Length: 281
Image (cartoon, rainbow, N blue to C red):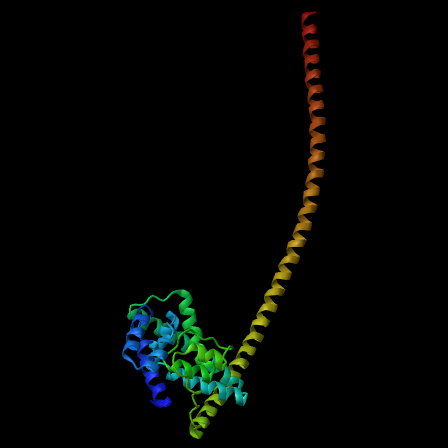
């Protein structure tokens, strides 16, 4: 069997095996190896059991749901080459939304197939899909639907990819041919977005100026009220001092009155006694 045919047959069988739940993989792989020719059987037995996260991504690839991610990866690379900041920002938002949606779908496919996907495995699913969006070689590996373990963007090299795929590893997916009409439309859309962003920025500046004017008036009012409060506090302090002085004077007068009242009572009593003595004479 020519090498190309052997590799093709191995990849076809591997793709079927990697669609099975990981718990069923080893038994199914050994069964297929037992029916194969010696050389193919040896290569089949060398296939490693996939992690749950890799299996979930394989199901997504088999379901044909990764095409958008591959197209976006090509657009990201082109935007990076052109140093188009606005387009990069837009595609970055689109990438995060797409990765989150595809990761959720992959987990759903795995759970529908009877698997249990842990929180850590969910993170690995998202990281693998993100790697496929960010790197053409990773996208090619993911699209085989024969992943053995998850991938991570920023750490992609041929050896790592070969170790992450069961069977042969195809070359990187070529970006789609440039479409001049699509580029012109994209440029017009970017220009429109830039104009809208500039309009919104100018409007925001005007609104800020209006708010600053209101803030200045409010601050002026606060300062005036605080000055009045300070004046009133000083007036209150002066009045309280006057009150203390008046109270002290009142206390002194009250003391004098008490003494005068006592003298008046003594004098009245003395007058009564004198009058009594006169009447008795």
